[in-house]
Amino acid sequence: MLLIAGLGNPGSRYAKNRHNIGFMAADEIHRRHRFSPWQKKFHAEIADGAIDGEKVLLIKPQTFMNLSGQAVGEAMRFYKLSPADLVVIYDELDLPAAKLRIKTGGSSGGHNGIKSIDAHCGKDYRRIRLGIGHPGVKELVHAHVLGDFAKVDGEWLELLLGGIADNAGYLVKGDDNGFMNRISLAMGGGDPRSGERKEKAAGETQKPAAAKGQSHIRQARTPKSAADIPASGPMADMLKRLFGKKD
Image (tube, rainbow, N blue to C red; front, side):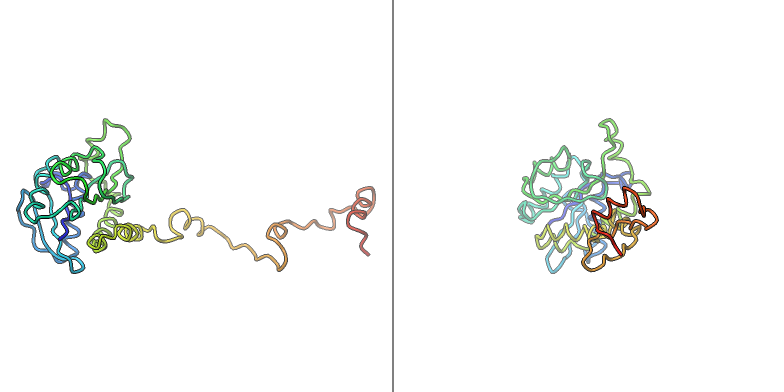
């Protein structure tokens, strides 16, 4: 069984906070797959279901972020799971908004929810970090993290959360690279003409093909008109010596 934990703070006050993007991801997986209704257990909300034929348990700790490990640890001990059976989804200040990274193990990066899970569950579990961007200065971090997503964030947030839910089967199979690739496609990164390349292509005009045997450099040169070449005088004599006289 795979245990997928989305991190956040409980209650409507925090529901739309950037810090709650882990809860949002768990809710989207719950919506798009056939999971049981949420129920309270292990100091958390849990729901069970199957993804690609594999049993999956979703968990949203209700202990507040800093004690997330208490709830996740209880669930893991009850089901006799190891860190290899755990995937944790949470917010990441040090990633630009709309970016996603996945890794196994590593440091908490200062995230209190991850510190708690490390303490209760060990460190060798998979971590899905969802970028929420950094406000730029340390003094604004608290307000940024516990602030709601702006309306302008809605489009990328929907794509990202939908991509995670639709491709959760890759997580079940342990195919982290496949998961990352599918998320990239969901966010538009799979189109080779997307972003700057697409804009550039839209503004390009097709250049005429070079004549057979000619290089593009030679073709690009503007031929000198006959009116610009003197018919007589020292310049004309020099040109005749260089190129030969034409009848």
